[in-house]
Structure formats: C-alpha cells, structure tokens
Image (tube, rainbow, N blue to C red; front, side, top):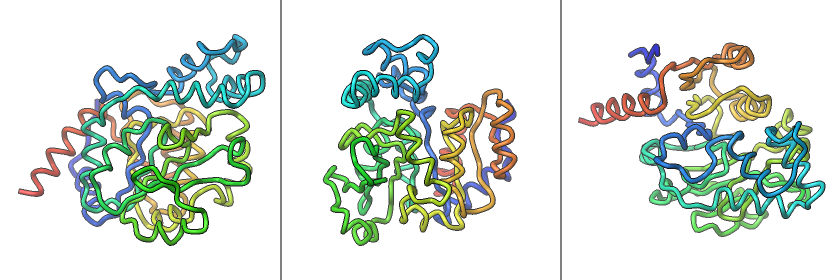
Length: 287
C-alpha cells in the first residue's frame, strides 16, 4: 500500500477546518463494523433479495435487475419488504461514522447506501436533518423527501424553509431503511432518476447550494458500476475541482478513468488505516 502523502493529509485537513470538506460515504464503511449484520455491498444485498424470491440465474448477481424482476413478478411490496428485512438488524456506528459526526463544521454528508448508521452517528448533533431519494413506484412525481432527526416528514411546502435552519444536511440519494424504508434499487427506480439527473432535477436544491466550491472525500466507495460513477459525478457537479478517495484495492479501467477525469486523488491505503491516521492528525491539531 502506498499510504498517504503528508501534503495530501494537510490539504484534507485544511478543507475540513474551513468547512469545505464533504464526506461521501459508501457501503465499504460497513467493513469497519465488527460482525456487521447488514449487507456491506451490492453483491451481499442481492444474495439476500434472491433468497426471498426466485430470480433467473443470469441476473441473480445483478442487484438492480434482480430487484426489477422481483418487482415485476412479485410486486413492489416484496422488494421493499426484502430491503427492509436486509437492513433491519441493528448495527452500531463505526469509528468512521462517529468521527465524521464529530466534525464541528459539517455542512453536508452524502451517504450512498441503505443502512442507518450515519443517521445514528449524527443523532447527537443539533440543527441537522436529512433528505432521501424516493422511488417513483411509491411516490409519484416526487424525487426526494426531507425528514427531521426524529424521523418525522417535513411537509413538501415547508422543505426549503426548514432545511435553511439545519447546519448539517445528510443526503441519502438511494434512500435508507429508516425512517420510512425508502429505496431506489430496481432498474425502473434508476431509469426515472437517470432521465433527469443530467439537468440535476433529482438532486435536492439544498445539496446543490452546499456543494458549490467544496471538496468531496470518498470513503468506502467504489466506482466500478455505472450507477456509482453517475451518482458520484452528478452529486459533486459544480463543486471544487479537487477531491479525494480512499481506494486501497486494484482499480478497474473505468475507475481509473473516473478519478482521472474528475480530478479525484487516490489515497491508496485501507480505510481503517486512513481513519487511524486522520483521527490521530485531528487530535494532534487540537492539542
């Protein structure tokens, strides 16, 4: 492993101190949860879903296609129930989730997976709330819903005004198991979003405002699949021209192209090691 250059660590720290650092947390963050009881990636999740319903062999390992097949032949409720059961087991936030939640200046957190650990970690903060992507199969003509920390829904007509009062916004573009089991997971879910995402319609206005000029730090993310790359790019669109990603494993050609194209500096070290180094550097800065 190459590790992290001191100047890179200093740049990330400076961005954090200025309130410009936006953590983008993916399913790989669950690797830091001991004996994690919920699926820590699409491969494990699709295994859970296909245990509940028979799916053709050729799509059994394709999460969005398998979810679409179940939706078509078993009803959308079967997909939602399977997703809820997969992420219902309780897990405690990892040290990574807790560290992010402890940052004094935290305008935005992007959490691109379906668990509720980031929500749990943020529970101790004041003046925060969340916005989640929702499926058109369950919420006609609505892209997102806003929720208060207690899980109560913010009325659509009050979303902008309520969100103005939050100093931290948690954005979960694919939904989450709590508070209302919102999930974008099937092919049709994503087709709806992808038809509009290039003009940013599905991206919440508040997210678009916050990201301007800021840097993204990708943690527990991969960019192997097109959906992962599209959501990452569209979320950080019109932000800063410099970002970072902790990517310890061998990259695919598509991943290499992605990070080169969007100036995402690779930090080639395990997430747990990065967490230890970054946490120690943060503590040292406070002394």
